[in-house]
Amino acid sequence: MFSKTVKANFSKVTPILKVKRNLSIHEFRSSELLQRYHVGTPRGIVAFTPDEAFQAAKQLGFKDMVVKAQALTGGRGKGHFESGYKSGVHMVKTPEEARQVASEMIGKKLITKQTGAKGKIVSSVFIVEKCDVKHESYLSILMDRQVRKPLIIVSKDGGMNIEDIAKENPDSIKKFYVENSSKELDDVIAHKVAQNLGFQDGLIEDAAKMVKNLYKIFQEKDATQIEINPISEIVNHEGKPAVACMDAKFGFDDNASFRQSEIYNEWRDLSQEDPNEVEAKKYELNFVKLQGNIGCLVNGAGLAMATMDVIKLYGGDPANFLDCGGGATPETIKKGFELILSNEKVDAIFVNIFGGIVRCDFVAMGLVAAAKELGVTVPIVARLQGTNLEEGQKIIKDSGVKIYSFDQLDPAAKKAVELASTHYASR
Image 1 (cartoon, one colour):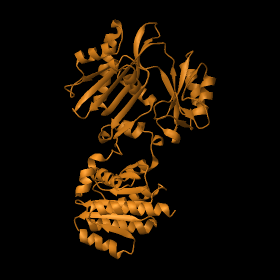
Image 2: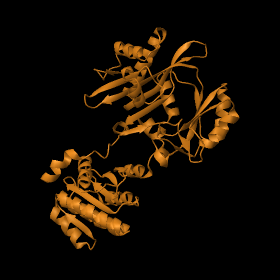
Image 3: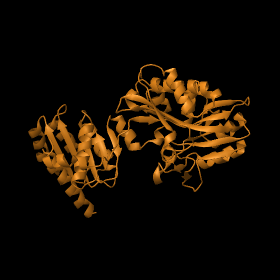
Image 4: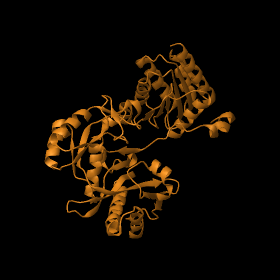
C-alpha cells in the first residue's frame, strides 16, 4: 500500500493524535455515583442558577462551604474567567456569598492550563461542606493496555497532580495490578492499597472498604479511569476521624454506552464537548479537530492515522482526524465535508478511501455530489483504491468538478500538500 520511502520513514513520525474513547462527568455526578456505592464524600448540592446556589447554601446550612465551578477541566482552582474573576473554587460562609460567587461563574468561560485560551463554559456550581482535612492521599484505577490488567496507582501524597507527585516524591507512588479482573477486589490487595495511602491503623479497614467499592464502580460502570484526588482523612460530624473522597474524575468507555444509558443519556453534558464532534457522532463519524490546514476524510481508523502520517512526511499538517468507517455513503461524505469546511484554516481536502465494504464508484458519486452541493472552493484530492476503482475514477473525470484523482497514496498525499500550500499563499 505504501512506498518504500514512506515505510522507511514511518518510525520517524511523531504521533500527532491519541484518540480517546471515554466520557467524563461533572463532579456533582461523580459524588452521586460514589454515594450510591457507599463511598464517603462531602455533602453538597448542585445549582444551575445564582438563586439556586443561594437556596442550596441555605439548605446545607454549614458554617463554611465551598463553591466549585462545574466544568470538565482540571486545575479549576488555579483558573480564571474571561471577566478576570479569579479561580473556579471559592470559600463562602453565607447563602448571599454563594449566590454572588455563582453569578460570577455560571454561564461564563473558565480558562485553565488544560483548556487553553478557549476555556470551558461553567454549566453549574457544586456547593459542598468544607471539611476539616487531616491528611490527603491520591488513588487512581485504570486499565493497563500493555499487560491487559486493571492497575491501581496510589500515593500517600495527594492534593496535587500526579505528575507533580512523581517529580517531587516518586518513591511515594505505588502500583498494584489486579490479576483476576472479573471478580471483586481481593481483600489482601485492598488492605495493601489502604496501607500505602498513608492512613492510620484505625482507618485502614474503612479505607480498604472504600478501595473495594471504587473498584466495583470501575467494573460495573465500564470505567476507563477513576481518579480520586484527594482521598482524605477528615473529622466527621461526630468529631471522629473518617475517610472521604474529596474530588473525583471519572472516564467511561464509549464502547459500553449501550450498557450505561443513565451515564450517557442523562449525565453527559454536551456543552462541554466540541459541537462538531457531537454532530459527527450523530452520523457515526469519528471526528477530531487538529491544528493543520489539510482536511482528511478516510475510512478506517488505522488508515486515517497512516494518512495523517504520510501528510506529515511530505511536509503538510492535517486539520482533522475523520474516520467514516465502512459507511462512506453520499450523506456521510457530505457531512464529513461540512465538518472539515467548518474550519476556516482548511486549504485542501484529502479523501483516502479503500473500497472494500464500500465501492469506489459509490464513494465517487458522493464526493462529486458533496462538492457541487456545498460549492467547495478549496482543492480536493481523492485517492481511491479497491472495488470498482475504474468506474469511480471515470465518475470523477466526467463530473466537471475539479477533483485530483489518484490510486496510490504517496503521489496523492504529495499533491494534497502542494495544493494546500498554493491555496494558502493565494489567500
